[in-house]
Length: 535
Image (cartoon, rainbow, N blue to C red; front, side, top):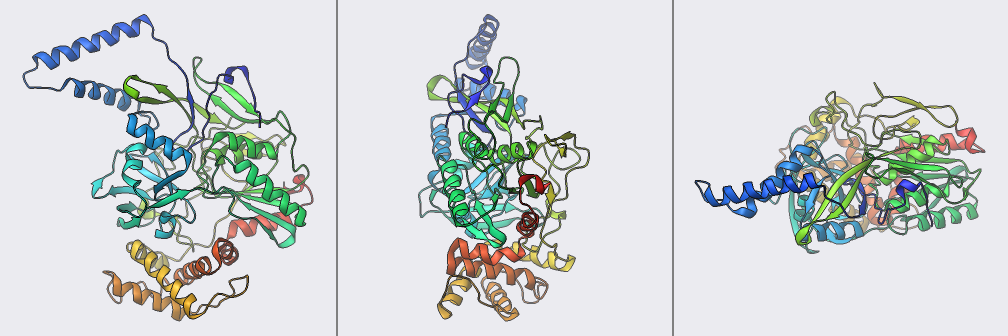
């Protein structure tokens, strides 16, 4: 699909929107005479130190010190030098077919942070969640790691295992995991469903090379089945190929509509990228679901559709990952990944988030409320944000990440329930394994039948699961987990049984009653005959 671009953006060769910073291009770089003089000065300093310093110093190490110092002074976690091995790791990661855990990660506040575990992957099954911070990998402290360093440690041969220590928002103690790697292959749209009131549901999990084609095929099929409105679910979608982000936005926007603006300095990449075809679903009401796991290309799609009043956004604020990187060739097969611009929505809202705390950092991890699904209930982050006006006159928040039009969360656990669930999360790896084993045994004793997961659980099953967990972990009887964790465990176990017995569609159907954002979307669409009715 051809993209319309401003002249300033016409030199783009390769565009990728990745959670680690997103847009990559390749080009050459010139040198001024002044730079040559400074480079000669550095060379002479290295020569003197290597030849005359009181202690032996490796010449190559001195250059590495200089490079590290330059990158540290920039203070940008997305700018780094990739050696041949690191670049190969990076290339494999972008292509989405590798042996690993199945998590998208970024560098934030000195720690590698999980943007989202990919559904159906080892990380998802182990219980890793959006917002988890990597503290250690294989016993090695991970503070200050680059994304490339983390990728090298986490990825490996399918079938091998890796020990990971995580810090989780809302949980005081670090959580240990031992996860077996698998070959990771990404699917963009795993299924499509026609829900109540003729609403078509399209879950877009990642922007792979086929994302636009998959979204269109599923949406067309749902409309043929009788759908009169659509939900595009971008929750937990960490990004992917930028062209596919543009392509998905293009499906819902008229020809020539602004999609995303890139801004650097006068010598860098600047320009607006625009849709190049007519709205394929003109007149069809559209709701887009987003959350903290929606990043990069997801934010480009959500932001552009919101700016133009084409879709109503429902959920929680997005991750806030919107920077442009340029890949530059260096001697010896190395590459410089350099931040050269930022992304902005068509109305000029910044996508890049610096943090949620008062000093631009994320909130303390042990002091956040937990919702009924055990996720950190992040506070609404609209205070002090700049406000712009949408194409139709609606106020929208800027300042990093995308704030949805309708903020919707599931119920928050009580204080006692939260304390019990935090204790449970301290044994997260053991709990996830016990839950899986129990679900498999449950289904063996009661074989799945029919097309819907209509089984009934009682409190006894939750108690039995927790008793098995205590037998296999360091949890002491009477540790306070029961009965306060029972409500969470019952729901969590329901979803695991549905997943193992009926697959992703079964798990989705079982989750629907607890999914407040989805219920809010269905409620909005129930009374909407046109996109304008949504607002």
